[in-house]
Image (cartoon, rainbow, N blue to C red; front, top):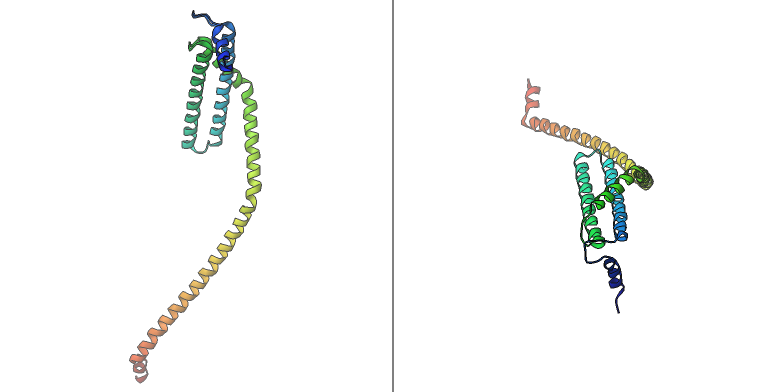
Length: 191
């Protein structure tokens, strides 16, 4: 009794003889899947490109995100191509795999890319709108709190100025009284 996986693998490999020929059905599946792989690489590229436009004010984070997106897209395309070639083509790499990959990327970039970018912008605007709705009460409370703190600071400064004047007056009065005890007022009055 063969398992389902063995039957699937047998169908995939039995259509090929021991020679280097691969069935046209498997090659067309490989071309189709690499075409979709190219489209998904374009989607990854669009997502990171959109993220870069959001971070355009911060130069350092922009370059990091751009590098990470390019690296992820390249690794994804390479691994996808290798795995598809292994599964459908006995590990042989064919030039039409690259053709399918580039064609899928090109077609995605010139058709669906605009729609995906518009959807991402819409999602960002909805997110920002919801964020503003939820954050606005806290902003109002914070503004009122800042006004209260500013008033409190003003009153504290006024009180400290009054205390400073009182301390100065007490100090000057103490100096005058101590001099008076030493007799400078008496000396002047005796003249």
